[in-house]
Image (cartoon, one colour):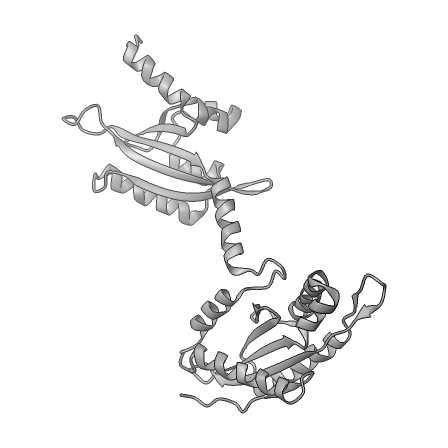
Length: 305
């Protein structure tokens, strides 16, 4: 077969592109590919020509079933010319976990006057971008010092769970370190940070899977406990209170630093608003501190609104 200069130029351009590019015919069979595609597939890629692309994704690449269905649906729309472009993102398993890819497909026409005879598919590796997105999501919901969830995450979760129908109850604890300013003033902020971290470990070690444990702000912590009654939350708070008394933070001179906490508790039906719940548990904590600190104060249960 004699190739024109334009064809050689087009081939050179495709091979210079870092993205993986393939051409498939109207039956979904691979007809051509660039060097990036061959390098990605190794020796196996040499045998891909003529193979059905969907079957290749499903069987050889181990694409997830839902992603295969999405890809097939997009290709059918392109073949029927109901859309002019199709894009999707998908993950493939690797030895170390998974890699993420972005796929874009467009119809292939010799010119605008002749019918299409296939599709051009371009595939980009977006694993680094996905990893960065995951890190950003974690940073946006976690407190960097304690690794607990932050206030924003807590309030979002509470808004998801509250205002629902039914007879479920929930409880919330607000915990405050007594005289935390004095700890910072007497021993320095580095020791203060260790106190926050040790308390965070104590809380996270004792919550259940569906509880949400957060650093609410400064030296205040808040735990949201779904499906937890008045008596159950009191037992939980008492357990936390006793565990805190056992925490020893070593000081530079070798002496241990002990600290106390005040805890406010409120129990309510799931139909209350998050604003009301947070307001009432804050009041309960205030009462615990007003009565002398180093104690648990349990407010009267809220009633259904």
